[in-house]
Amino acid sequence: MSGAPGLNFNTKSDLVAKNTADVAQEAGCIRDGDSQSAETLKFLKEAPFELLTNLSITAARAARPPFGGGFFFPIFDGDLIEDAPSEQLRAGKIAQGIPILAEWSTNDGGWYASPTTSTDQDALSSFGLWLSGLSDITNSKLLDLYPEGDFAFMVDIWFTCPVVDFAWQYLKHGGVRASQVHVAAHNSSRFTPIYAAMGVPQWRVAHLSDIPYVLDSQSVAAGGDNSAPQLDLSRSISRRIASFVTSGIPDGVPGLGTWPPAFDGASAWELEQGSPSRLTLEVKGGPFGNTVATIGNTTNAASETGAQAALNWERLYGRCSFINSKSFREEAGV
Image 1 (cartoon, rainbow, N blue to C red):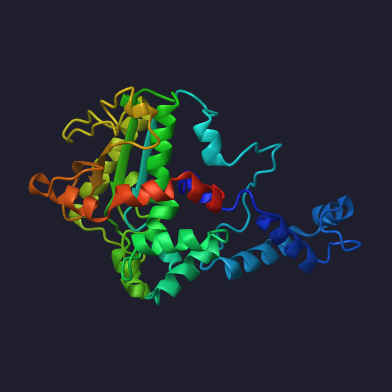
Image 2: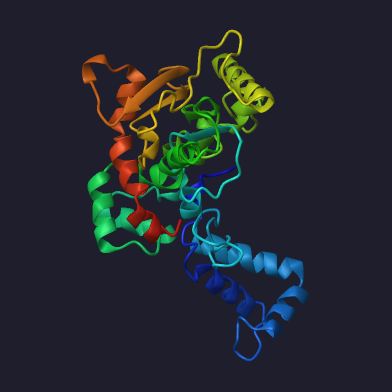
């Protein structure tokens, strides 16, 4: 899926209902001042598709630049959707037996923060576009976790922490065996020259960067990086994905290194905890090449590999412990 399980922010709010009512108002479909009436719904159904599309996209992009995400999405209503997604996951209301390959790109969500973001208030303003229900205490904690100059908050809130949480909760609640859960951090982009030409080099390994690798694209157009090392990396990643699609396991591909399960060896006691004590993942591309790293809630700097040091520098455990906490999830509406 494009995005992590935690992306449906504000599922317990009236945000989507308000957005829909605003579009209905612009389309001239509201009758008798009641945006929720059957008559209003009737006129919306009869309105031209092009009109509703243009109004919706214009409103969404204005409210959620640059692409308009998070403007319309399913919301918790206690009926069709019984509870917030993260709560249903923790209640074990999941489809069983689906092997998991969970991944994020290292600068995922980077394009949602303004290029001019430089202060605490700028950071809080970027949160506010998406997370309208965060308390002052939560905002203060986020600023502590992400001091000025460190703007990885978008990556962690949107992708990294929900991805790790989903993989752990799915295993914990019996979705699959530990051998069927694999996690990766994608750390290379063939769009780098394109971003530079666009004037947004800070996007780096942004959302969708993994697609040319997964599909083993031989030529990324518009000035993309089609160098021999990138084509080799694309080929190896694509072979991993093909193995996962056909067997449920991305490991064991001839000529490629091992890719251990994310939580292999987790004890029964560990599986009773809210979060994992350690995580094994494959880091794809970047300065360390394709490598496997294991990180935990304790570190030993003397024995760290380069990839482990980079991941530990991001303080993944402390940050995700808060972002995946019940209080944050409730305020975020996930």
